[in-house]
Length: 308
Image (tube, rainbow, N blue to C red; front, side, top):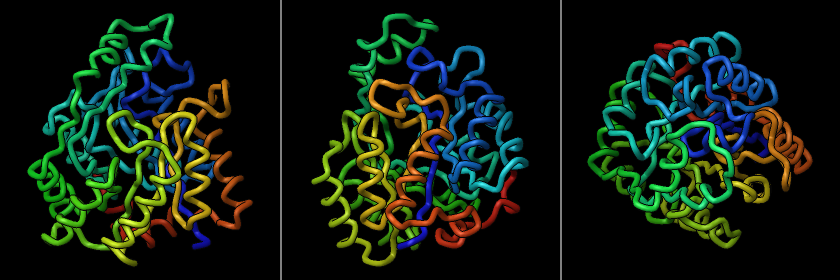
């Protein structure tokens, strides 16, 4: 219980450049913020790419490869590539960069769901880019698609064929049962690293009762064969990750999940959030795991066996 894995989700595909001047967009910005987050204590860096011209979420392998080798050369953190990308991307697009990079770890959303971002549009008065407003407002009719067939393909192409392990992103209780289904089919093997996701409109709400319930069901389904981590959107980030740390779980922070460092105050970097949660978990008696320790805990293949 003493070792805790801190994950930092550096940029994501939910927030838009108009929401914060500190959201990393270019390869230089993503590289700098990722390396700084690793130096602050993040053992895992969860990575998306963006078009450097306008900040739009990008699935292009060239956009990923503009920063992945530079991050790897600058730190020892585990590079965890998204297979979720954006709900606007096809599965072929979402898998293009991970298949090229063959990373140690990938994220994997464990089901299809509504992914509603449109309430954020009402809080923006000035838009930097034309695409942002339409992207947010049209999410009232947006479904993120990850069917059992899609999940099977991701597990096969990234796991079986390329040796990646997964951050299983579970946005509701049903996703835990879907993971159990794939474990029973033999497509995934322990130890399972399960990311409980709270506060996305369309998924489970950011209530402490829900965290307790997700943990209860995961214990029932996976026994001692799993470790859980928690991420929570927006203002719920630090309260729920603190609770997770006190429960013996792991934590995820980063500008993908929240743009704030305190009420009414934008975080100026990912590293600022990592440093904050690190102080909290250390005061709870937990010791941040190094990348090497996290690799051992999660059974990863090692950075030398990637194509980065």
